Length: 283
Image (tube, rainbow, N blue to C red):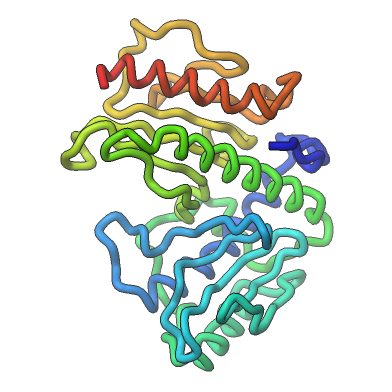
């Protein structure tokens, strides 16, 4: 994994506005999926996949009249795309476009594919206040930050996919690496035992682009049930233990960027924190 220079183009603590804009735009994709796919118990029908070759988030495939289609979101430039048969059918540059207008454009595209409109669909969750306040996609001053944010998602997708591959022998094992539009994090969940999700042991491994807990992107390794704070060993470098609300290993973006060799150091941090989590859970 060669480090992208885009990770350093904009300071990790200066990505908040771009993150809110992209988070709001991602809701267009999940609304299209929710309107046109059967609901899954774990809500996975609504999540997004990162496509490295396109540097975009893609929805789950939708059953359009021309075959499976995908609604996609690029960051640089911020734009909506409709793909059918792997080919871009139409694109809307979101610069200066209101959320409502973007929804109307998407509804028209969906209608042309004999799919249900999505803009009026209510989401089953609340978005952060700064995301709700995005009424239009004014990206003129946030383009570099959006590109840097995309670089963090791309890095996370690659590192997490490789991590999931290394741990594929675990049963039930790692889930697919997907982005969950509620929190806008990209993650895999490694099930460590069979059983109900609420009670069975497992470890979430992912990247948040930043939230109310950390104002910058951060990698997390979050075991369930919560680990005992009193028995934690030293945190793997370059991270630290987070113990407020959840107990997990965190490597914030500014910590990640201190690594002299990010290609080796970031996977090593994730592997070490995951091993500690398994040990603490006895799994």
